[in-house]
Length: 432
Image 1 (cartoon, rainbow, N blue to C red):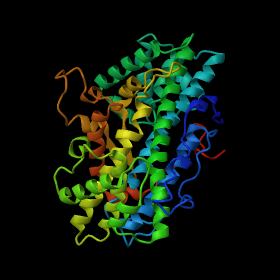
Image 2 (tube, rainbow, N blue to C red):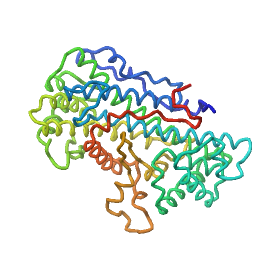
Image 3 (cartoon, rainbow, N blue to C red):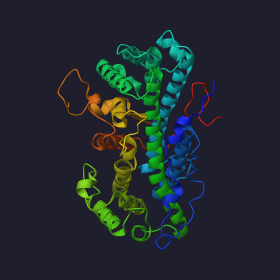
Image 4 (tube, helix red, strand yellow):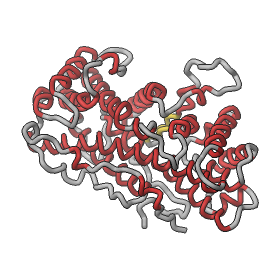
Protein backbone atom coordinates (compact mmCIF):
# COMPACT_ATOMS: atom_id res chain seq x y z
CA UNK A 1 0.00 0.00 0.00
CA UNK A 2 1.61 3.22 -1.05
CA UNK A 3 0.85 6.51 0.62
CA UNK A 4 -0.35 9.12 -1.78
CA UNK A 5 1.36 12.42 -2.27
CA UNK A 6 -1.39 14.85 -1.52
CA UNK A 7 -2.01 18.19 -3.14
CA UNK A 8 -2.92 19.37 0.35
CA UNK A 9 0.72 20.23 0.91
CA UNK A 10 0.77 22.69 -1.97
CA UNK A 11 -0.39 25.55 0.25
CA UNK A 12 2.44 25.12 2.73
CA UNK A 13 5.25 27.64 2.62
CA UNK A 14 8.94 26.86 2.76
CA UNK A 15 11.25 29.83 2.68
CA UNK A 16 14.13 29.72 0.26
CA UNK A 17 17.55 29.39 1.82
CA UNK A 18 18.71 32.17 -0.46
CA UNK A 19 16.74 34.57 1.75
CA UNK A 20 19.40 34.00 4.41
CA UNK A 21 22.25 35.36 2.30
CA UNK A 22 24.25 37.95 4.23
CA UNK A 23 25.97 41.19 3.39
CA UNK A 24 29.34 40.53 1.69
CA UNK A 25 30.75 43.58 3.51
CA UNK A 26 30.26 41.77 6.82
CA UNK A 27 30.73 38.12 5.88
CA UNK A 28 33.10 36.33 3.56
CA UNK A 29 30.63 33.66 2.48
CA UNK A 30 28.68 33.58 -0.73
CA UNK A 31 27.54 29.95 -0.97
CA UNK A 32 26.20 27.48 1.60
CA UNK A 33 28.49 25.07 3.42
CA UNK A 34 28.62 21.95 1.23
CA UNK A 35 26.47 18.91 1.98
CA UNK A 36 25.04 20.17 5.25
CA UNK A 37 21.53 21.08 4.21
CA UNK A 38 19.67 19.44 1.35
CA UNK A 39 17.19 21.64 -0.52
CA UNK A 40 13.57 21.25 0.53
CA UNK A 41 11.65 20.64 -2.70
CA UNK A 42 8.38 22.54 -2.52
CA UNK A 43 6.65 19.73 -4.40
CA UNK A 44 7.80 17.09 -1.89
CA UNK A 45 5.32 15.68 0.59
CA UNK A 46 5.48 16.92 4.20
CA UNK A 47 6.86 13.50 5.20
CA UNK A 48 9.68 13.78 2.68
CA UNK A 49 10.47 17.34 3.76
CA UNK A 50 10.58 16.14 7.36
CA UNK A 51 13.04 13.40 6.42
CA UNK A 52 15.34 15.90 4.71
CA UNK A 53 15.14 18.28 7.68
CA UNK A 54 16.00 15.56 10.18
CA UNK A 55 18.97 14.47 8.07
CA UNK A 56 20.15 18.06 7.70
CA UNK A 57 20.01 18.61 11.45
CA UNK A 58 22.05 15.46 12.01
CA UNK A 59 24.85 16.76 9.78
CA UNK A 60 24.83 20.19 11.42
CA UNK A 61 24.74 18.68 14.92
CA UNK A 62 27.88 16.66 14.22
CA UNK A 63 29.68 19.62 12.65
CA UNK A 64 28.84 21.88 15.61
CA UNK A 65 29.78 19.28 18.21
CA UNK A 66 33.18 18.95 16.57
CA UNK A 67 33.76 22.63 17.40
CA UNK A 68 33.09 22.30 21.12
CA UNK A 69 34.42 18.76 21.61
CA UNK A 70 37.95 18.36 20.17
CA UNK A 71 37.81 14.58 20.59
CA UNK A 72 34.51 14.18 18.76
CA UNK A 73 34.49 12.83 15.23
CA UNK A 74 31.38 13.31 13.10
CA UNK A 75 29.49 10.07 12.99
CA UNK A 76 30.62 9.13 16.47
CA UNK A 77 29.36 9.73 19.99
CA UNK A 78 30.16 12.70 22.20
CA UNK A 79 30.09 12.47 25.99
CA UNK A 80 30.34 16.22 26.30
CA UNK A 81 27.37 18.51 26.81
CA UNK A 82 25.49 18.60 23.45
CA UNK A 83 24.94 21.69 21.36
CA UNK A 84 21.39 22.77 20.45
CA UNK A 85 21.55 20.96 17.13
CA UNK A 86 22.01 17.68 18.97
CA UNK A 87 18.39 18.05 20.12
CA UNK A 88 17.07 19.27 16.78
CA UNK A 89 16.94 15.92 14.87
CA UNK A 90 14.88 14.39 17.67
CA UNK A 91 12.48 17.34 17.80
CA UNK A 92 12.11 17.15 14.01
CA UNK A 93 11.40 13.44 14.35
CA UNK A 94 8.54 14.17 16.77
CA UNK A 95 7.05 16.62 14.26
CA UNK A 96 7.44 13.87 11.68
CA UNK A 97 5.47 11.47 13.85
CA UNK A 98 2.60 13.95 13.91
CA UNK A 99 2.81 14.36 10.14
CA UNK A 100 2.82 10.59 9.75
CA UNK A 101 -0.30 10.43 11.91
CA UNK A 102 -1.96 13.00 9.66
CA UNK A 103 -0.99 10.94 6.61
CA UNK A 104 -2.64 7.85 8.10
CA UNK A 105 -5.74 9.90 8.94
CA UNK A 106 -5.93 11.10 5.33
CA UNK A 107 -5.93 7.46 4.22
CA UNK A 108 -8.78 6.57 6.54
CA UNK A 109 -10.81 9.49 5.20
CA UNK A 110 -10.05 8.51 1.60
CA UNK A 111 -11.09 4.91 2.23
CA UNK A 112 -14.38 6.09 3.72
CA UNK A 113 -15.26 8.02 0.56
CA UNK A 114 -16.34 4.79 -1.12
CA UNK A 115 -17.98 2.94 1.75
CA UNK A 116 -18.36 3.83 5.46
CA UNK A 117 -16.77 1.41 7.89
CA UNK A 118 -19.09 -0.76 9.99
CA UNK A 119 -16.92 -0.21 13.08
CA UNK A 120 -13.95 1.70 14.40
CA UNK A 121 -11.66 -1.38 14.27
CA UNK A 122 -12.55 -1.99 10.64
CA UNK A 123 -11.74 1.64 9.80
CA UNK A 124 -8.30 1.16 11.32
CA UNK A 125 -7.86 -2.23 9.67
CA UNK A 126 -8.41 -0.69 6.24
CA UNK A 127 -5.09 1.13 6.48
CA UNK A 128 -3.26 -1.70 8.21
CA UNK A 129 -2.89 0.22 11.48
CA UNK A 130 -1.31 -2.21 13.93
CA UNK A 131 0.57 0.11 16.27
CA UNK A 132 1.31 -1.12 19.79
CA UNK A 133 -0.86 1.77 20.99
CA UNK A 134 -3.88 0.63 19.01
CA UNK A 135 -5.94 0.03 22.15
CA UNK A 136 -5.64 3.70 23.14
CA UNK A 137 -6.34 4.81 19.56
CA UNK A 138 -9.54 2.77 19.65
CA UNK A 139 -10.38 4.20 23.08
CA UNK A 140 -10.09 7.76 21.77
CA UNK A 141 -12.09 6.79 18.68
CA UNK A 142 -14.94 5.40 20.79
CA UNK A 143 -14.87 8.49 23.01
CA UNK A 144 -15.25 10.65 19.89
CA UNK A 145 -18.21 8.59 18.66
CA UNK A 146 -19.96 9.30 21.97
CA UNK A 147 -19.81 12.97 20.95
CA UNK A 148 -21.65 12.05 17.76
CA UNK A 149 -18.74 11.76 15.34
CA UNK A 150 -19.10 9.13 12.58
CA UNK A 151 -16.93 6.04 13.03
CA UNK A 152 -14.55 6.80 10.15
CA UNK A 153 -14.14 10.39 11.30
CA UNK A 154 -13.48 9.29 14.86
CA UNK A 155 -10.92 6.71 13.69
CA UNK A 156 -9.17 9.28 11.51
CA UNK A 157 -8.89 11.91 14.24
CA UNK A 158 -7.75 9.36 16.81
CA UNK A 159 -5.17 7.75 14.52
CA UNK A 160 -3.77 11.22 13.82
CA UNK A 161 -2.45 11.13 17.41
CA UNK A 162 -1.24 7.53 17.39
CA UNK A 163 2.45 8.19 16.73
CA UNK A 164 2.71 10.72 19.57
CA UNK A 165 2.71 9.99 23.30
CA UNK A 166 -0.78 8.53 23.17
CA UNK A 167 -0.03 6.74 26.45
CA UNK A 168 -0.94 10.08 28.01
CA UNK A 169 -4.56 9.16 27.29
CA UNK A 170 -4.27 6.38 29.85
CA UNK A 171 -5.54 8.97 32.35
CA UNK A 172 -9.34 8.95 31.78
CA UNK A 173 -9.50 12.68 32.54
CA UNK A 174 -7.02 13.41 29.75
CA UNK A 175 -8.84 11.05 27.39
CA UNK A 176 -12.18 12.75 27.85
CA UNK A 177 -10.83 16.28 27.68
CA UNK A 178 -8.89 15.44 24.52
CA UNK A 179 -11.96 13.83 22.94
CA UNK A 180 -14.06 16.85 23.84
CA UNK A 181 -11.56 19.26 22.27
CA UNK A 182 -11.25 17.25 19.06
CA UNK A 183 -15.03 16.92 18.85
CA UNK A 184 -15.36 20.70 19.14
CA UNK A 185 -12.74 21.25 16.43
CA UNK A 186 -14.59 18.83 14.15
CA UNK A 187 -18.01 20.36 14.73
CA UNK A 188 -16.74 23.88 14.01
CA UNK A 189 -14.52 22.86 11.08
CA UNK A 190 -15.26 24.09 7.55
CA UNK A 191 -16.68 21.51 5.17
CA UNK A 192 -20.00 20.45 3.68
CA UNK A 193 -19.97 16.89 5.01
CA UNK A 194 -18.40 14.92 7.88
CA UNK A 195 -15.42 13.68 5.88
CA UNK A 196 -14.64 17.17 4.59
CA UNK A 197 -14.77 18.53 8.14
CA UNK A 198 -12.45 15.78 9.35
CA UNK A 199 -10.14 16.53 6.43
CA UNK A 200 -9.93 20.16 7.55
CA UNK A 201 -8.78 19.11 11.04
CA UNK A 202 -6.20 16.67 9.71
CA UNK A 203 -4.87 19.04 7.05
CA UNK A 204 -4.49 21.78 9.67
CA UNK A 205 -2.27 19.57 11.80
CA UNK A 206 -0.19 18.49 8.83
CA UNK A 207 0.40 22.07 7.67
CA UNK A 208 1.03 23.38 11.18
CA UNK A 209 3.70 20.82 12.03
CA UNK A 210 5.31 20.94 8.60
CA UNK A 211 5.44 24.72 8.45
CA UNK A 212 6.80 24.95 11.98
CA UNK A 213 9.54 22.47 11.16
CA UNK A 214 10.41 24.25 7.92
CA UNK A 215 10.41 27.68 9.59
CA UNK A 216 12.86 26.54 12.29
CA UNK A 217 15.10 24.65 9.87
CA UNK A 218 15.26 27.55 7.45
CA UNK A 219 15.96 30.01 10.25
CA UNK A 220 18.28 28.27 12.72
CA UNK A 221 19.56 25.56 10.38
CA UNK A 222 20.20 28.14 7.68
CA UNK A 223 22.12 30.34 10.10
CA UNK A 224 24.27 27.38 11.19
CA UNK A 225 24.99 26.53 7.58
CA UNK A 226 26.11 30.10 6.93
CA UNK A 227 28.20 30.13 10.08
CA UNK A 228 29.96 26.87 9.34
CA UNK A 229 30.82 28.02 5.83
CA UNK A 230 32.11 31.35 7.15
CA UNK A 231 34.17 29.42 9.68
CA UNK A 232 35.68 27.30 6.91
CA UNK A 233 36.96 30.48 5.31
CA UNK A 234 38.37 32.14 8.43
CA UNK A 235 39.64 29.15 10.41
CA UNK A 236 38.84 28.65 14.10
CA UNK A 237 37.80 32.18 15.08
CA UNK A 238 37.93 33.59 18.61
CA UNK A 239 34.60 34.70 20.03
CA UNK A 240 35.49 38.36 19.53
CA UNK A 241 35.87 37.85 15.80
CA UNK A 242 32.53 36.02 15.57
CA UNK A 243 30.78 38.91 17.31
CA UNK A 244 32.47 41.53 15.14
CA UNK A 245 32.37 39.88 11.72
CA UNK A 246 29.55 37.33 11.54
CA UNK A 247 25.90 38.32 11.18
CA UNK A 248 22.55 36.85 10.23
CA UNK A 249 19.37 38.63 9.11
CA UNK A 250 18.11 40.87 11.90
CA UNK A 251 21.20 40.66 14.09
CA UNK A 252 23.29 43.60 15.30
CA UNK A 253 26.92 43.38 16.48
CA UNK A 254 26.40 45.60 19.53
CA UNK A 255 23.40 43.51 20.62
CA UNK A 256 25.28 40.24 20.10
CA UNK A 257 28.14 41.63 22.20
CA UNK A 258 25.76 42.55 25.02
CA UNK A 259 24.23 39.08 24.95
CA UNK A 260 27.67 37.46 24.97
CA UNK A 261 28.85 39.60 27.89
CA UNK A 262 25.66 38.77 29.79
CA UNK A 263 26.27 35.07 29.21
CA UNK A 264 29.81 35.26 30.60
CA UNK A 265 28.56 37.12 33.68
CA UNK A 266 25.64 34.77 34.37
CA UNK A 267 26.97 31.44 33.09
CA UNK A 268 26.74 29.81 36.52
CA UNK A 269 23.35 31.19 37.52
CA UNK A 270 20.84 28.62 38.72
CA UNK A 271 18.44 28.19 37.10
CA UNK A 272 20.13 28.80 33.77
CA UNK A 273 19.11 32.21 32.31
CA UNK A 274 16.21 31.85 29.89
CA UNK A 275 13.76 34.75 30.31
CA UNK A 276 15.50 36.88 27.73
CA UNK A 277 12.61 39.27 27.05
CA UNK A 278 13.12 40.44 30.64
CA UNK A 279 16.86 39.89 31.02
CA UNK A 280 17.92 41.30 27.63
CA UNK A 281 15.00 43.50 26.55
CA UNK A 282 17.07 45.52 24.10
CA UNK A 283 18.57 42.53 22.31
CA UNK A 284 16.76 41.03 19.32
CA UNK A 285 16.47 37.24 19.36
CA UNK A 286 18.33 37.17 16.02
CA UNK A 287 21.37 38.67 17.77
CA UNK A 288 21.19 35.89 20.36
CA UNK A 289 21.97 33.43 17.55
CA UNK A 290 25.27 35.17 16.76
CA UNK A 291 26.12 35.29 20.47
CA UNK A 292 25.42 31.55 20.68
CA UNK A 293 27.98 30.75 17.98
CA UNK A 294 30.52 32.95 19.79
CA UNK A 295 29.81 31.07 23.03
CA UNK A 296 30.38 27.74 21.31
CA UNK A 297 33.78 28.99 20.15
CA UNK A 298 34.64 30.25 23.63
CA UNK A 299 33.51 27.02 25.28
CA UNK A 300 36.22 24.96 23.55
CA UNK A 301 38.83 27.28 25.09
CA UNK A 302 37.32 27.22 28.57
CA UNK A 303 39.67 26.26 31.42
CA UNK A 304 37.30 23.79 33.09
CA UNK A 305 34.42 21.47 32.16
CA UNK A 306 32.03 23.38 34.40
CA UNK A 307 32.72 26.67 32.61
CA UNK A 308 32.54 24.96 29.22
CA UNK A 309 29.17 23.37 30.00
CA UNK A 310 27.79 26.60 31.41
CA UNK A 311 28.61 28.47 28.21
CA UNK A 312 27.16 25.71 26.01
CA UNK A 313 23.99 25.70 28.10
CA UNK A 314 23.36 29.42 27.68
CA UNK A 315 24.23 29.20 23.97
CA UNK A 316 21.62 26.46 23.62
CA UNK A 317 19.06 28.63 25.40
CA UNK A 318 19.86 31.54 23.07
CA UNK A 319 19.22 29.37 20.01
CA UNK A 320 16.13 27.79 21.51
CA UNK A 321 14.70 31.22 22.30
CA UNK A 322 15.03 32.33 18.69
CA UNK A 323 13.58 28.98 17.60
CA UNK A 324 10.53 29.16 19.86
CA UNK A 325 9.91 32.87 20.36
CA UNK A 326 10.41 33.95 16.77
CA UNK A 327 10.78 31.14 14.22
CA UNK A 328 8.00 28.68 15.06
CA UNK A 329 5.39 30.99 16.61
CA UNK A 330 3.80 32.03 13.27
CA UNK A 331 3.11 28.37 12.49
CA UNK A 332 1.28 27.80 15.77
CA UNK A 333 -0.50 31.17 15.80
CA UNK A 334 -0.66 32.63 12.28
CA UNK A 335 -1.25 36.40 12.06
CA UNK A 336 -4.41 35.64 10.09
CA UNK A 337 -6.47 32.43 10.30
CA UNK A 338 -6.72 30.26 7.22
CA UNK A 339 -10.39 29.87 6.19
CA UNK A 340 -9.93 26.23 5.15
CA UNK A 341 -8.45 25.26 8.53
CA UNK A 342 -9.53 24.91 12.13
CA UNK A 343 -7.86 27.28 14.65
CA UNK A 344 -4.29 26.08 15.03
CA UNK A 345 -3.98 27.24 18.63
CA UNK A 346 -7.01 25.17 19.63
CA UNK A 347 -5.65 22.16 17.76
CA UNK A 348 -2.28 22.44 19.51
CA UNK A 349 -4.07 22.72 22.85
CA UNK A 350 -5.82 19.42 22.16
CA UNK A 351 -2.48 17.82 21.28
CA UNK A 352 -0.50 19.24 24.20
CA UNK A 353 -0.88 16.26 26.58
CA UNK A 354 0.59 14.01 23.87
CA UNK A 355 3.78 16.04 23.34
CA UNK A 356 7.01 14.11 23.92
CA UNK A 357 10.66 14.08 22.89
CA UNK A 358 12.37 10.76 22.27
CA UNK A 359 16.15 11.05 22.45
CA UNK A 360 17.48 7.63 21.59
CA UNK A 361 16.84 5.48 24.67
CA UNK A 362 15.61 8.46 26.71
CA UNK A 363 12.04 9.77 26.58
CA UNK A 364 10.82 13.14 27.85
CA UNK A 365 7.03 13.40 28.19
CA UNK A 366 4.91 16.48 28.72
CA UNK A 367 2.62 14.51 31.03
CA UNK A 368 5.58 13.88 33.37
CA UNK A 369 6.38 17.59 33.35
CA UNK A 370 2.81 18.72 33.95
CA UNK A 371 2.08 16.40 36.86
CA UNK A 372 4.89 18.03 38.85
CA UNK A 373 3.63 21.57 38.28
CA UNK A 374 1.11 23.62 40.20
CA UNK A 375 -2.48 22.58 39.54
CA UNK A 376 -3.69 25.60 37.61
CA UNK A 377 -7.44 25.23 38.13
CA UNK A 378 -7.39 23.22 41.36
CA UNK A 379 -9.95 20.75 40.02
CA UNK A 380 -9.35 17.05 40.46
CA UNK A 381 -11.51 16.21 37.43
CA UNK A 382 -9.10 18.13 35.18
CA UNK A 383 -5.74 16.52 34.56
CA UNK A 384 -2.84 18.95 34.80
CA UNK A 385 -1.57 18.02 31.33
CA UNK A 386 -4.75 19.47 29.80
CA UNK A 387 -4.26 22.85 31.48
CA UNK A 388 -1.57 24.00 29.03
CA UNK A 389 -1.44 25.00 25.38
CA UNK A 390 1.73 24.21 23.41
CA UNK A 391 0.87 26.99 20.96
CA UNK A 392 1.42 29.57 23.73
CA UNK A 393 5.09 30.45 24.15
CA UNK A 394 4.84 30.87 27.92
CA UNK A 395 3.32 27.37 28.22
CA UNK A 396 5.91 25.51 26.13
CA UNK A 397 9.10 27.39 27.03
CA UNK A 398 9.61 25.96 30.57
CA UNK A 399 8.96 22.34 29.52
CA UNK A 400 11.33 22.69 26.57
CA UNK A 401 14.04 23.86 28.95
CA UNK A 402 13.30 20.88 31.19
CA UNK A 403 13.67 18.51 28.23
CA UNK A 404 17.13 20.02 27.63
CA UNK A 405 18.13 19.23 31.20
CA UNK A 406 17.13 15.60 30.67
CA UNK A 407 19.29 15.52 27.55
CA UNK A 408 22.22 16.98 29.46
CA UNK A 409 21.93 14.12 31.96
CA UNK A 410 22.17 11.59 29.10
CA UNK A 411 24.46 13.28 26.54
CA UNK A 412 25.34 10.12 24.61
CA UNK A 413 21.65 9.38 24.01
CA UNK A 414 21.38 12.36 21.67
CA UNK A 415 23.85 10.80 19.23
CA UNK A 416 21.58 7.84 18.57
CA UNK A 417 20.08 8.87 15.23
CA UNK A 418 16.28 8.77 15.06
CA UNK A 419 15.09 5.66 13.19
CA UNK A 420 13.21 6.12 9.90
CA UNK A 421 9.50 6.75 10.27
CA UNK A 422 7.62 3.66 9.13
CA UNK A 423 4.49 4.07 7.04
CA UNK A 424 1.47 1.75 7.28
CA UNK A 425 2.77 -0.22 4.30
CA UNK A 426 5.87 -1.12 6.32
CA UNK A 427 8.29 1.02 4.29
CA UNK A 428 10.34 3.88 5.75
CA UNK A 429 9.61 7.41 4.60
CA UNK A 430 11.73 8.27 1.59
CA UNK A 431 11.54 4.72 0.20
CA UNK A 432 9.55 5.57 -2.92
